[in-house]
Amino acid sequence: MLKYLEEDGKFVEITGFRNVKIKDAKDLLNVVRGETAQDAEVQFFDADLVASWQHLYFAVLNALMALRNNRNISKSAAVEVMLYASAQRQIKKAIDFIGVKSSSRNVAAVIISENACSAKAGLAAVTKFLSAEPDESVLELSKEKTQRIKCAFNISEVELETVTAKKDAAQALVDSVIERVALLSTQL
Image 1 (cartoon, rainbow, N blue to C red):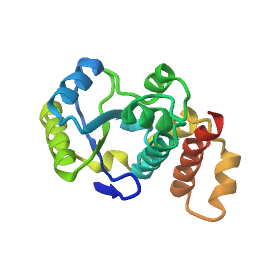
Image 2: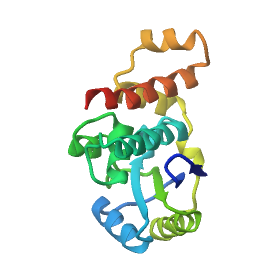
Image 3: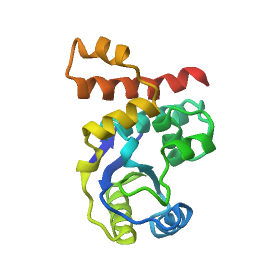
Image 4: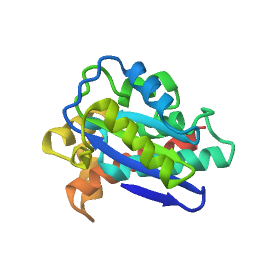
């Protein structure tokens, strides 16, 4: 899914890949980043901890706002998105928490670029390297994934019940994760 963020003049591609085999996460980043345009940044996430495309979209929005307002932790938009998506202030903790590992089978990718062509080329490079076609369904919530996310983000049943009073349970979980993403900027 390609979106244009007018305020930042950036294109953002958010997608997922199912049943991939990653030998080395650092190699994945190095190779893909080497094959993408200079104006494109790529970040990978363990899709099993991503609470829908909205989770990553709001992480991107917050990361770009932090960079725009000089409140960023990292110099890189891709790393800043990792921090926000994980709701962690430390890069190593963020990567350990939500970054891809050799055990990751479902991967989410975020590509941030100055133009749509670079974003599409970045997606093509990721697709080629992973030897898999994009599958956004890995970003959707399942029962098992919901439990994993609740545990990882420390979301209690009481919190979900409070938020669920106004919406369905799946959207309540997404909103709770997005709230944690947004709260990171208050901790800077």
